[in-house]
Structure formats: C-alpha cells, structure tokens
Image (tube, rainbow, N blue to C red):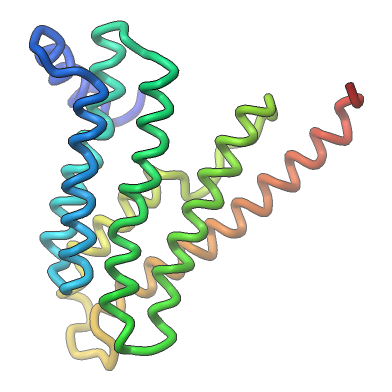
Length: 200
C-alpha cells in the first residue's frame, strides 16, 4: 500500500456516488499546474507549491476514483499519462523564466525537466516492450515531493545569497543528476535483459 492510499481512497469512494468521472478529475489537475508555473515564473514560490500540490492530489484522486468505479480504461490511462507530462513541465518552465535574468543557472530547471521526461519515457517504453526494470530513482512521486518542499522552503533558506532562492537550484540540480544516473542505469539493465532474450 502506498502512503497516500489511506487518505485518497476514502475520498474517492465518497465521490464515486456522484456525477464526477475519473477523466474529469484528470482534466481538473492541469489548471492548478499551469497556475503553479505562472507563480514560479513570478517568484511566488509558496503559491506555486500549493497549486502544484493540489494538482498532484487531483492526479492521485483520478486513479483512485477509477478503481472505486471500476472504470479503468485504456483511454483514461493514456489521458492521465499524457497530461501528467504537461503538469510536470509547468513549474520547471516557470523557474526557467524566473532564473533567465540570472544567466546560465536558468539551465538547471531545464535539466531537471529533461531528466524527468527521460525517466518517464524510459519507464513507459520499457513497460510497452515487456522489459522488467528495477525501481528507478527519482520517479515522479520522488520528484514531486522534492520540488514541493523546495518551493515551500526556498524563500527561507539563504535569503541573502547572491542568487535568489539558491535552495531551489541545489534541489533541482541534485534531482536532475540523480535522474540522469537512474536513466543510464535503467538502460544498462535493459541492455543486459535484451542480451539474455533470444531474438524473435
């Protein structure tokens, strides 16, 4: 059982008796993420954290509601996965805009986003090919928690530093490095599996 299930599942069961559909909840998760990206671009980090957190809660709720209603469909899974990528990109893009006046450091949130997309694609493509990958570092839930906490604490850590919100840059940079390492390890694991599988 995942840590969020005791909290999300009862809410989903209550909503299961109403008109709300899992796909509607999936769609509802995108506007808060877009607004979080705007807040990040403007330096309103606490607002970005709260809105991105709301988007994450709705993303958890759509799957729980689909299970409660026994309405898990291929289209619902595709819609959820595709909009997850949109939501994941909003805050990093906002941070690229925020740090753009400060030069090359604006590349750090861009690298965070690139690592996030790479890990997500490797995992999804491996599943479609039937490859059994180990649990990757810096999966979506790990990146989500790291980013929300960094946004909440950004204004309070090293407020007098030369660069604004240096904590954000450190967290994004570390997560990006770990993400690229995890992706490389996953590809190496997949290569070993492929060598052991006879060609069809």
